[in-house]
Length: 195
Image (cartoon, rainbow, N blue to C red; front, side):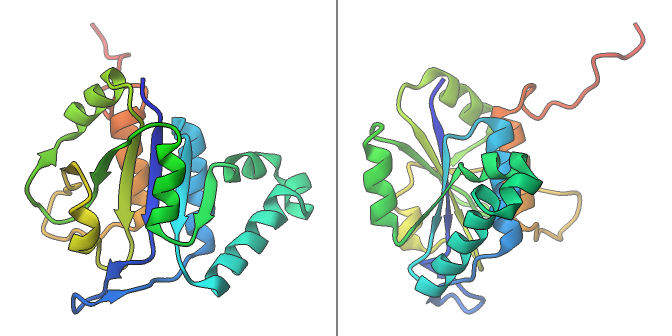
């Protein structure tokens, strides 16, 4: 089975008007994504931001949980946060991942597009491939073409029951990881049904 990496892109991403912007990190993003990565065996999650103040805040939060009072208070959280790495740009992240092999880059979007891979196909691909996989997630209003053009494929969007489609990033990441890396691939039929 291949190693799986995540990238959460805070720059470059789109805003509501389609302009390229940088978005802010959140404390919840770090904690919740770290725990999902630990739960599903993700190798590492890169948080990509060039904003030095954002990086400094995130590093202080992580230091609190990894070696400060938080590490004694909740050691499990410290362990999960080892799955997070903050980098200044996509190129820095790419150099690090390429040290482990030439990755298969899969983009994500809440909008349908071309070159789609579904969850079952991606799960099978990860199990058969020797190369590492990088799943790229955009913040704000999504990834711009300059990023999606670097992706081999785009992952099928998560669809709910209606037209509303605006999950938080950390919830979407949890759903996607369960579908592609979970014990049963997102198939939640119960095994304990009466015969």
